[in-house]
Image (cartoon, rainbow over all chains, first blue to last red; front, side, top):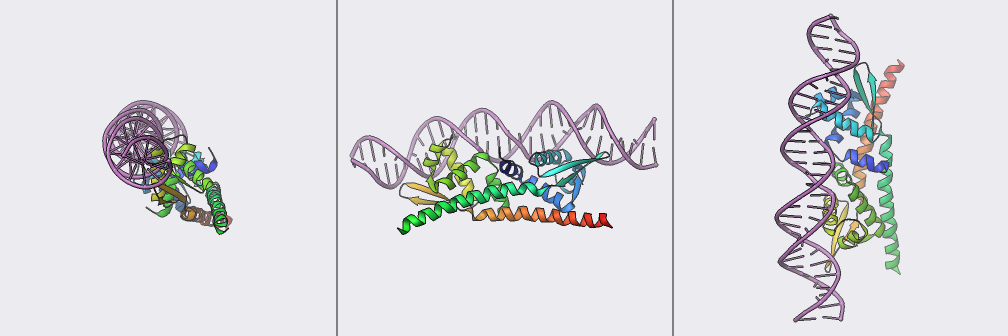
Length: 103
Length: 103
DNA sequence: GTATAGTGCAACCATCCAGTTGCACATGAC
DNA sequence: GTCATGTGCAACTGGATGGTTGCACTATAC
């Protein structure tokens, strides 16, 4: 799957969006810390973090017995590129249709 | 839910991304036409188009007995804004941490 | 008129997955 | 050492939903 696809799949879940937003606002946090601020269990948070890591949107770093997660928003670019591509394609089509209509 | 949330939910499905990409490349098409170019039935295409319309990513227009769909990529902006907000939040946090580390 | 092509709606099924619970293991504090 | 805290893994469950089939309805073509 494309990188953009992975990003959309990861962000397609509302809770996952909350997780990453929370993480961005905290700066860095462990699954346990995030679970304290969210209405779900640590296990659920872990699964979401795994999915986000899979998409390259967060990274994990072991620190003693704690695992600290951080946001890595670089991949947002892939999703943005996908959207602007679709938009551009549509715009080109639209322009073509308009030219034809003008003739 | 936020508009950005709706966009991500809509684009979270791979088939739905194919549908909107196909629609953008065709310019405009009915559910029947799209079903011909995709490996799913018209009914499935309809459901996806409904979801995309719900998110404001496509619009439908009746034309005789045919219903023609078009891409309306304006809503992509909401999703992009969400991503840049999360990124900015993280960047601000990062800068703060770096300042503290530099002290 | 009839035949054809398109749409809309409802029911059904299978699969996926978010979330939970429970337990074992690891690490730091004392 | 013990105790507390945090993580990892596995099994299970309920609900959501992507996809299908079937049928009724509508509009164009002839």
